[in-house]
Image (cartoon, rainbow, N blue to C red; front, side, top):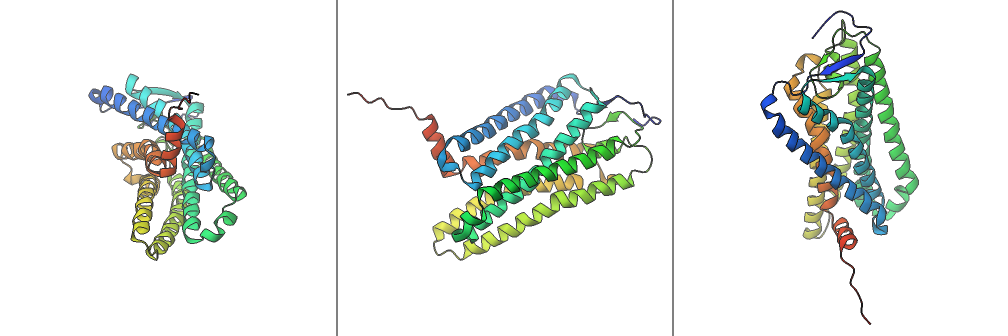
Length: 312
């Protein structure tokens, strides 16, 4: 819905799933169920990793951070989606829209770099086991997490400030939350500079860490192939393939969303991609990266096993 220059615009309208009204009740139940399941899984991982001393290692430190970020990530997006399914078109203030966009970008970009840090941790654990504890010290791990925070903050601020300081010629956003691509459709005039800015920043935030992930896994696979035991190879390949599936889904869907020109945008496809990396990946993270792990399973059994009474 393109109007004149709306410099005094105070709110937007999120159209969301306006074309699928009959399916709203079903979608609401499915998304709410997945949301609750994902929150529970990530909360369990964070609590278990913090409470069990055996899990106080770099890998579980990163997994705890990932679980916490996924919880925050979901809390930014899912409430808007559920509200949209309940009431249809949703009005959202310009300020709230800007905060939602910044938060979404912050957690999304931070997760991109955190996944790269986790792949580095796996690389050093497999390829440099003798120097692993020195390389991945607690100081290095904290620095990597802080670096991810800084990158997320920088990209969130850049996109949000540039987008919301531009003149607006529309108030209807064909999406279920304030994401940057749909917002480009309501900007006035030539949006090419904004499109280029989105792609350039996405190359830094998506392709750069993904390249590091691929490099790390190539090194890990190369080392695994030189293992003498076929059983060790099979176990290592199983773990690596599962984790690689998660990062491929996340980077692949995010890249498909941000690394393409505006003329190729399609509202229905973009909504599907947004759901993929905002809901599916946070659900896969704890299931594949943590709950399939023997150490986590052991910690869960220990945590919830009933204490035995000893009678004298």
